[in-house]
Image (cartoon, rainbow, N blue to C red; front, side, top):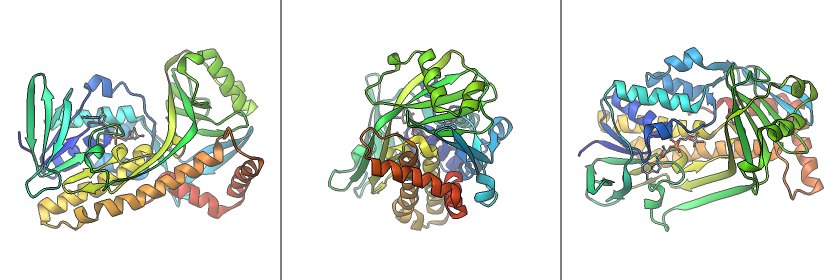
Length: 391
Ligand code: APR
Ligand code: PHB
């Protein structure tokens, strides 16, 4: 097979890029390790920054998001039971976020790829990348049963998530990896209940952090900070609701509607960046190159700028013969990635309970929040990062 851009990974990053390039007449093939059912069965986060929502529209995939997603102009922070609202709209100069599940967004992207007869090949095994940095064009191989299939291309996009093979194809002496692992995870529960609050509540509490989020007016998503040693089996639904209530303001806990969990999982919190994001004709995008803890809702949103830069760089290459965007990709993408890292680290550090923290650190955490609520400049800084820095 032959294509212009071979994209490894059928998550939101790979699908979005494939769709955008298709609309400019650039041919892609997307290779995905899992079945579509598996990919669409994964429960992911649900806050989209303004710029990502715009990309969805540009990709002609924004219709359902605009119909079913909710515009949020703010969120609440609870500090040991005391609630303060962060007015995102006011402090970001009129911007907002869209609450729309990443799973639904991925479904919309798959539907669009189908509609436009895009090639997305599922269940590919043993994907391998070849000739990425030689004088001959690159190619990708995968196994289909007993057969090895070869795809010749101009460029390879590694959009295969944190565990995929693309990043590993870059030689160790070229790649630098920066990593920070937090000493806790988030236990998440999805339930068919009315959300406890119209807006998200990020709750700092001595017992540990909690988050009240939602997918719709009948579907709630809640999280609590748990030790890394905990497993899902350690937490019955009843235990989860009891613990969540303890970390929320009394008036919120009182109106919390509980019900059976329809999904329950634990995710460890990790910050990770790989540099550079380009090696020869390989370009990394999204989780393949960087991971953030979910506290600042930056995961998908830091993938958005990678896709935006790559999309424009490819269009300039194919339609104008201009390679400046490709040459500047890694540097430009990483500059924004590190800002998302900083913001996610700051939100995580300010709001969680660290098992080995010293009294001095806890005082600083409290002061960070007190300063935030006392300073319009600090609130503006939070808001501009949360709604998304410009691409
Ligand atoms: N071959 C082909 N596909 C692969 C391989 C492989 N060897 N390994 C992994 N993949 C696929 C995964 O199955 C997954 O569907 O690559 C896809 C990567 O998708 P994501 O992990 O969703 O990453 P990305 O598209 O960059 O999206 C970033 O997802 O994890 C969240 O917080 C993150 O919200 C962010 C978003
Ligand atoms: C979610 O709804 O899953 C969610 C929302 C905000 C976050 C993290 C997760 O910061």
